Length: 112
Ligand SMILES: [Zn+2]
Image (cartoon, rainbow, N blue to C red; front, top):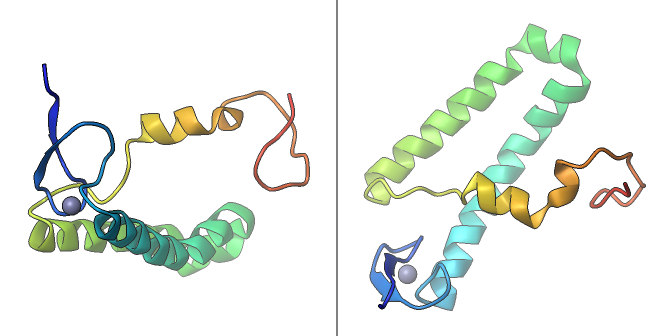
């Protein structure tokens, strides 16, 4: 039985492995995530590590506003297709995020 699914970026039907129909679609999908992530990064880090100032400035409200704006863009420009990857997939790729461990200085993987 052939698995039919749609390209995460353009929504065209496709079969086989992979999430994208073409390199351009992969690039466009990841580039949007990169741009949006950069916009969120400073706010989220302040929310997490400069809590007092972040609360005074309403940083988490701004984070939520950005997410809502991104979703509206997705609904208008992407026929409602999600612009983010499955959290299950993301966490499966990064088991250290669920491990009981300490920071090892690399910023990526912690040792158990
Ligand atoms: Zn595509």
